[in-house]
Amino acid sequence: YEVVDNSVDEALAGYCDWIRVTLHEDGSVEVEDNGRGIPVDIHPEEGRSALEVVFTVLHAGGKFSKDSYKISGGLHGVGVSVVNALSEWLEVRVHRDGKIYRQRYERGKPVTPVEVIGETDKHGTIVRFKPDPLIFSETEFDPDVLEHRLREIAFLVPGLKIEFEDRINGEKKTFKFDGGIVEYVKYLNRGKKALHDVIHIKRTEKVKTKNGEDEVIVEIAFQYTDSYSEDIVSFANTIKTVDGGTHVTAFKSTLTRLMNEYGKKHNFLKKDDSFQGEDVREGLTAVISVYVKNPEFEGQTKSKLGNEEVKEAVTKAMREELKKIFDANSDLVKAILSKIMSTKQAREAAKRAREMVRRKNVLQNTALPGKLADCSSTHREKTELFIVEGDSAGGSAKQARDREFQAVLPIRGKILNVEKSSLDRLLKNEQISDIIVAVGTGIGDDFDESKLRYGRIII
Image (cartoon, rainbow, N blue to C red; front, side, top):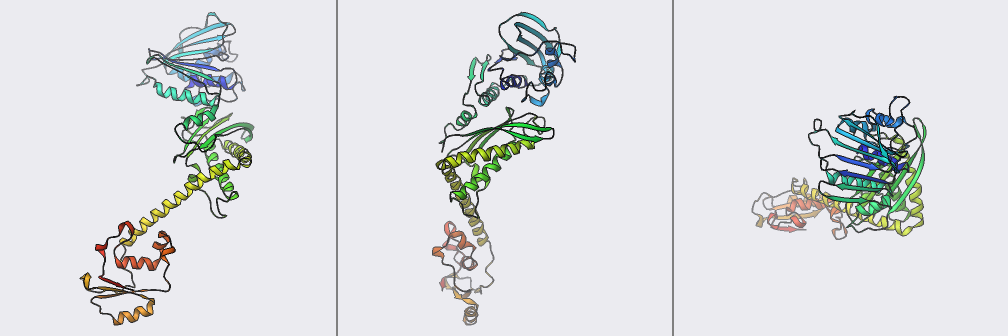
């Protein structure tokens, strides 16, 4: 994607509004844009055409002007020179200053000079290359993967038109989304029932960095649906951060804190109660896009953003912008809180159910209560269980009983009113648990009368 990302950088800088990507029958791929065109003048430091420098020197893109591209998403930060080095051949044509320039490379080395091949009234760059089979065991491009990535870029850069032509399979597609990431969220939520309109914020935050002060552009769009899953897609300088990073961490924590604040404000939560992060994110679809001047990615794959200043920028932008939105629209925030509250209640009910199952299993596998004075007979029909109140009555009953067929279980004090108690509270009660274990039948769906340990139970 390095070549495409260079074209996207031109679009972000405001010089390009159209990109075309073509898969050719010979296995090569061509990327064309209508940007300014790569400079072709002699580079003052290198003493050769700037075009050749870009395609043969690592990190050359930043040599032309420090502020040429304030925001850049070129993969690995090493420039198209790596694409050139990994290609069997590469040809670049530049439309600039009324002329068409061309240069060809084979396995990274120029085989022609930068030459003028015609005149033009256009501007832009065309790069066509073929991956080197001596380096790659697989040199075919996956059109579905390319299509997915190009669609993402079109969502992230509103108004940018991207044409994709697959000449191998005879397919053409065009992507252009004026609605940006708001439209992206709607696309991700197609087929789902949305609970409200997409919430969108965009702000530029000043942040302190190691080198002084910089700006971070924060753009977030999100929407809740009736689904049970979360779908958070994140980008840094248009590069997809599949493993998240500081921008995603800040988004999750800030949204959770805000929803807890508004949950208490609108009486969805009691003072000591709270939503968990998983409650807040169930049914949430979000697109997070940040632009930072010097992105720090963890690993060479750029899968996780590491800039700490981005966390501060996202947190501040979200808190201030979402408070404005929520304070101005109580129906919106209540609709979201109702969804989150339902998720919380379902989670807690599921937890109680798991605890009850575990408690039942414990009861089934638990030894007989220590206070039970059991009988010796194995003939159930002849046996009796006396449940008596208190240890004092239990002591008298034990002395008066026939040990062969009469068992005694003393229960202390006033027993729990099971009619008004939940099942999980019932199972936690020691006296009730002792009775369940002593009787032996189990309860609820696990009730089995054939496992009854006594012929008669006397209270």
